[in-house]
Length: 239
Image (cartoon, rainbow, N blue to C red; front, side):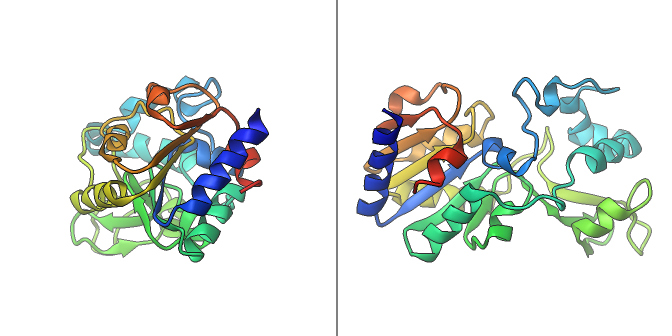
């Protein structure tokens, strides 16, 4: 049954000229990066403060030192490498099939794999800016700094990631919507589709085939033409 579903996915890709991929934390778990909501995810581990609280704008402003202790320990993706899913997507883009990757991840692994047209809904750990003068700093500087990373001007450096209480970047959001609206095939993978407003973007799809790939069921399964409940690595190694 699973082989038939993967064959159907391959058939959809072959007949499509405008594929869009929408991915969540499950895309990067096979690289070793923990997700948030699974039983072993960050949100089910014990910390001094709940991770949802730590990763909020208010907490960053009021408890910057505690924020960075957690951020440096749990959000550093520099040591991880792209997995088969990242690599296959870059290959599909290079062949002209895949027009855009829309990701909820902040780890930068799609670009590391060679993908060019990536819309990072929740930002990236690779970009960091001084809150005072807006000077850019790379992730190596931030993760390698002592305590709170500071700019040469004395200002506090903030990662360019979307924290709770913060809105999505408008150009990233509108670019994502544009590509979804124009796609003939949309592949949604490695996401529970529970985080708003990102998960609601699926409603903009008007194309021919919607495919959902996730180990667990999602609330959008009944809208899909094809649902594959399998790990992404097992699926994309066959694509």
